[in-house]
Image (cartoon, rainbow, N blue to C red):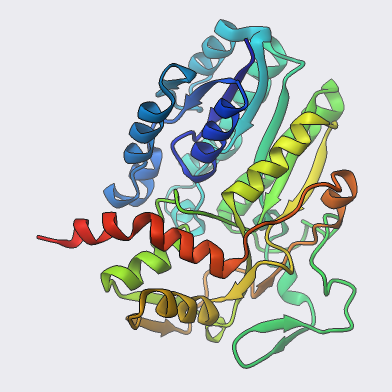
Length: 359
């Protein structure tokens, strides 16, 4: 029996990974206590996704409603499966800049202490398991905003002659910048994952994601901008764009493309690996461009407004360099670009969203 322990299993990446690894023959143990509903309210609850997983996967999926901050509960879970654990995929997190500032202790407890609990349980009970952590590009803080950026009609872009024109690499500094408290807690977790790999010779990887997205995302105002943007367009919910003239750029990676990268790493793991991962030059957009695509797909205008105040620590322009990962795993390729991602989000959710708005 090969067991995959997947934290955040009812969330976007966790649920897609759960289905993928179950299909590959793993017995999946999902760890998720729906803290997303506590963070962002009932509309962001992942219960619907958990129920779908349990219905689809049956005995291949066992759900554990464990809080990863609970050291004893985490240790007990790992002790139960021990060396049957082949993979630990850690996707659970408090994912919002704004929410972290409201409750820094909870943010750090979930993101940093929770990660430490999982690493130590893996070291004690399943040291040969592959440990994959979904980190974030926010570990770089707002330092990318110091790059030579040029304002264009619908987006900010980096100067075409700059060495980062194909994306920001992993050796970009994470120091001397504003991270937001969320970024700081993720830095702590990221460095811990690296250190357990180096110091204890464990097979670990940090995937520093851009915007992770897909049809299973329970998008909300503070997290999951493509899914929430499409939801607002469908339901007529007002949306606010914060700062940078709405031209801030993000690369966006579909959950299926990200999980195929995880699987490539699992099949040929390394120790203390760090990869920037996102849509790169293949899949990226500005806020204004994304709004236009949502309007085009739905056939209706979006009710949006603009605020001059950008979010603290936010990026003006972020595109990931995928060169390091592609060098290590040359067979991996992106399949989805932004228009395809938004169309799939719409197709998968439009009926559910419309039904929810009917009184």
